[in-house]
Image 1 (tube, rainbow, N blue to C red):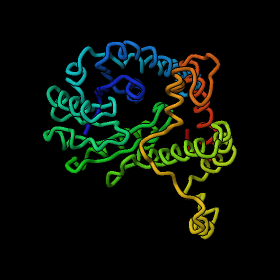
Image 2: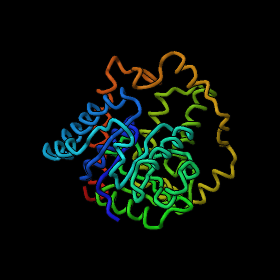
Image 3: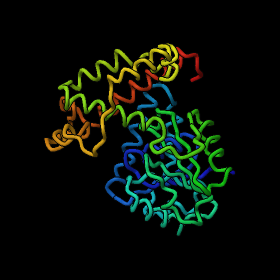
Image 4: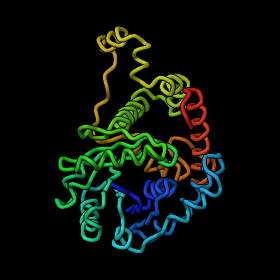
Length: 316
């Protein structure tokens, strides 16, 4: 199975970044979004991300220019997928919209094209036309995917057994870290852990008056170093499993119940503090633009990633 030409459907937060990932991998990419405004903003965001990688020394100026030249911006979904070997679906997490997008892909894409959904938590396989089931899979990435290497790969009940290994081989060849799931785990691993952490942090703010600053302080100074070096399960081995068992048996900790609501988030959003894009969320960002904040985040991630790989003796 040869994957060369790529179409990315959806040019938002993940879509534009996935276009860059595949272009850096050497693939010609057609990027499409149903919103002309989102699509028109994608070239600037892609160039900025590419520039950050270049600034950090992860790619050369020549590699950056070559990647940018591989990305074309399509005026229609039909045009984007017409000659694609791989179609990356990165549209909003709403089943109805995804179903419609898959139907349009089915109408215009080559029958042998692989469809890879970037869904974060939906079981998309019932949304995909029957004729495309054999060539469909999930390839779920983490933002920003041009820095974060994890890719969750999941086969559907009728997926050709060659599809996921082909995607795994492709992405490993680019230095990514694909993880293949034998069965569908809703939310995969990293997203499930993140969801549990989100609930607990919000519960501590609401019930105990803990500050967002104190939560991040505790994570950065109490957890990050050990998790980065050991992971969580190996960290439990170092703690001692009897101690872990005793902690559970004590019953002093009970996980929060997800009732589908968060008063903390509701208050912030109602006050216009919806995150970096709004200039404030749990924290104020001093009038810095979202572009500046993302640029700074990416540079810090790249520096940390390099230092961690050096520490662990891993290849760059």
